[in-house]
Image 1: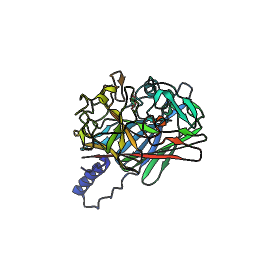
Image 2: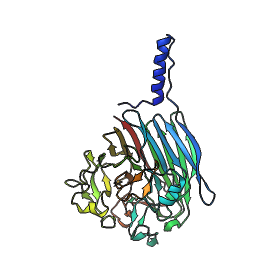
Image 3: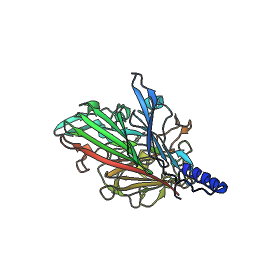
Image 4: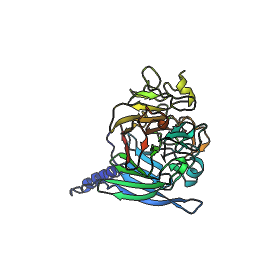
Length: 384
Ligand code: GLA
């Protein structure tokens, strides 16, 4: 089904009513222009104000807060045109400050290094660096106070067919143990029915960088139950097996003949409890898939048969972490007040491979002065 904005439908009805009473020429309804507004989301204990930007384009509405650059809500229509919030999150700033890290990292920008670095240690140009161990025995998602906890400087933008929110954060040399002053920019752009995220970073010393967004999707609507019935397709013939601490072994293994094979659309839950050692380590899927091809290409597609919503993710990254919400244990209550249990959302984090700084054979995550780190991921929505 073609998604048609509710407003257009109402206008259609009004036009029909108008035609029934008179024969005047119906007005032509122009598509509403993409728009961006802001409101105060909350205030941190140090007095810093956190703003929430609302981006609208066509039938999509996305809400992003300056704390952690978090996608706090994303409303998209189902096959009947009914809107629902399809990302997990919290209703207020306190939720994000107190429960998101340590915790699920709902919707957040992750840096400086998305995913795990073994034992929080890596060596670059002969020097060894130590990062906070926050996921024993490893360093996860940039350390205890990663980019997901920073207040980003926001600059809204708007053209006739898109709206954007540019977020800037400068990470001081040595922050969370990483070398170099890292100037990071993330731009969310909403155009048509796709949200695009562009990441850029520069450094003044050799460092490592791996940025992503950690949204959890539930295409049936946040708080409505599990995602095991969602059909997932991953454009990947290989994945990186992990050890019991979810660090890649270094092997690049074929997915063929294993529950890791999502080359054809398959229900997330179809094989999640199979007797397959990799699935036991993280209580479900929590792995990096090695994307086929190169350049900006389709990486993943998720569809929810009940609502008809489809999410297509494209990226230029070499990998994607598919995490089936295994550690949601019922202790958190989300945006609409519902309890989040295991498998109530799934994350698809486009990325370089976990622990790359310790695996010279993996694509490099090293960024040097004079170079610019650039990557993009797009989340496109449809319903049928
Ligand atoms: C990532 C990790 C998971 C888990 C979540 C947050 O996706 O790979 O193991 O830590 O973040 O809960």
